Image (cartoon, rainbow, N blue to C red):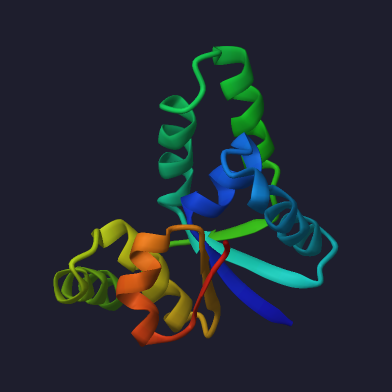
Length: 137
């Protein structure tokens, strides 16, 4: 089964419909995970990053809560990064000039023999040379 690590950019596009051209593709990924056709994995940090993204993109509290519930219902296996992966995330963030958050998803994908899916074009441009990454655009 194909395995993917997703970051907050993917989740927020699917929930908030912030990039109309990507919504259908992202929702297809969510459906495939629900159907057991693919496995979605992410860091436990994803919960707070998605909550923060919703907080600063949706003014209506009731809608925000609905979006967050939708996120929590997604079929994503959340795991903690090992100490080795945490150290690697910091090191690579310096090397690439990226945030530790973004880099940690990529490191997690490599550690889990998965492909990192992101909608973050800026990170993708800096990190595509590492491999195991796909930009949804």
